Image (cartoon, rainbow, N blue to C red; front, side):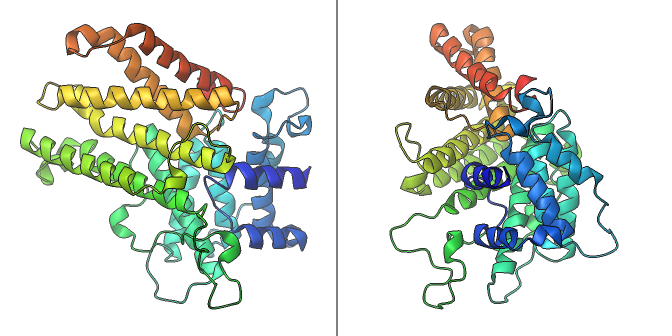
Length: 393
């Protein structure tokens, strides 16, 4: 069962949210490091918990429990282990465990616990200086730290936007590079000519996480400037219709640049037979539409010159998101990620608001088509509610 769950994690979760270095992780597992290292043992338990959501093996469920209990038998063991010593520096395996636990907790009935744990893990990275550029030669360990740190920053941006709370760390305080766009097996080959170099013509699966980070950086900027307090807005001089036009144009330009630079292998193709490509494109495009809505939502709740164009952008983004999720359901390849669940919910709400307020806004709507798109969002959430509490809510 352990090998099955590890394979499920590396096949389904690792390809969209890489946290560990696959070759190092598998080597440590083979050598039995989890029998000697508490942090690695907890990381294994966390991986089993997350992977259980993708597995059809009945052993992943609690006795007499439904699909929502998948993984709890492993996660509860992490809680029963002694807490880490807060008076020493955290280890890589401990922080990896926290990051993986966050991906599990966000889908439980207490997702707010993920926000707390995430903030603690980010603080541990900051204490070690992982957020700063070092100038030291790249190594497997340093790149592993960078990978887990950026995965936490990505989760911090998405979860903070969902719950309406500030991010734990400002992007202005981070100057370390994004994770290397190089597949795990090419990190350190032992040959200086090939180490840290992706073979020519072979797309890297790690490119997805880098483009996701770039997209979430736009989201973080929007949250900081559009959803800040009145006091903060006044102190930054962000008042008046001219400023609104300027910030909207700036964010739209950043979004257009992102989509223009997206590599071909990450572009949405509903007919692709490559499952990794399908999952990665699903994540990126759903997040893209979610960020579009988050950027323009503040302008549709008040009367301004941006109201109508912003409403049109939100509506188109919601429709596109709904139709993408519809493909996942039809292909029976649903990606049960809380990030996509919230995107589906927000897209559905935007479409319903259009139906209710359409005649007043001046938008030309096709009610049967709009209702079909709302149903697509609901079908996706319905498909996920057996795995994630948040989908059923």
